[in-house]
Length: 535
Image 1 (tube, rainbow, N blue to C red):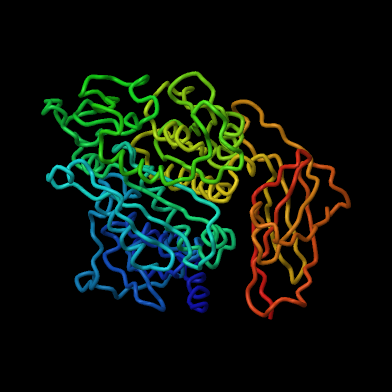
Image 2 (cartoon, rainbow, N blue to C red):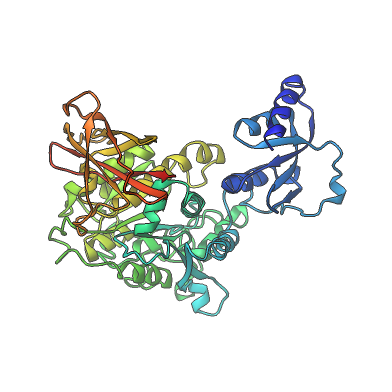
């Protein structure tokens, strides 16, 4: 396969000016599988066939030499296949495998099918759970199950972190379900090779509900006249709202949760976009998600009292649009009892996705929302990401900016969910690397989005590493090893640090090294990791 890549380099260079299309084989590895499926979708009928069999799976595609060169530069191995006859294709790719006009998004049916496949392909890492039924299914009118992906390595280690991610509460918002499922796929694809993903799934549970509102999404996947569908498909009192445009029947699920239900940001016209339903938690989709929320440990005594800063767990609801990171309260101007901590984490998350961090009511007052309800019930930090600039976000912006930036935010959330009110105040451990037994990293206390106020930062005062023992307040036996500042002293908000690992007592094989830093406010940040192999 290496020789193939070399041959292709000369072929492309020799014909760089020739833009005529020809048939190519695009080989992909296991790690490139998701990206390869995206290419299949994007090329449509120009990629009529693929061969997924190991050890050398590939796509057959009719592309220009410039496109072939671009795929090569992305890490694929490409080979001309000029004798290919598409009439003899053995594995035809479906031409309808995406939302019409938006080839980067999966339909409701495709999302559910891919969730089931992900769980079937990774039984030791992914569990698929049916958490309830959509409105249409509860009434015998078809409908769908509501599915939750539960990602965690089944290794017997007691789990300390918990992250819940939901998408598709509003049917017409294509970005949320796609990003939620891609997050699941990213974690699965990188487990065992990416050290941070590996420890996240070893020590935590990541729960992902990509499609909260499958009935509504099926309407939004339909004809152009129905794509503005927002609510579920509950036809209250047999009303005649119609099915065209945004004023249709159904309940707004993000106004149907319990806390402060019906108090603000709602419209009692049953045809309105923000109709909250007949009563709090009246909709089966709301009940399904809320039942998952209620399994979280309770860290507050009441919604008006601060939750314990030792709280574990974190919730993010994916929406579009507005480029915002929002936290409670959303129902009105009052500050949540943990507003300072919520704001700090919000600014940290917004550093990654480059969205504006603000209290939810700053967008507009709305009650009965997902994030207000979970924070009120359990005291767990809860956020809404309003991603992008449109309900029907174009694929170019989604692929180049929205998906990669928000995936980084979700990975940080998975790290922070162990101590979400504490870790975001501390510095990040970056660029963790090993050269032999020489361990290096950068400890940085400045990574916040200060577009809406300024987050205080401090000098770094310490850094440490652990070998195969995850540092956790409830695991006091984990042994720290000090790291020193590369320049000789800790006197800056960003410090390069180093240490030499003594491997004499370590067994042969792969080990995990955890690194973290502390600032002058005595705040430890979350860990980052690197693999150490002892031969």
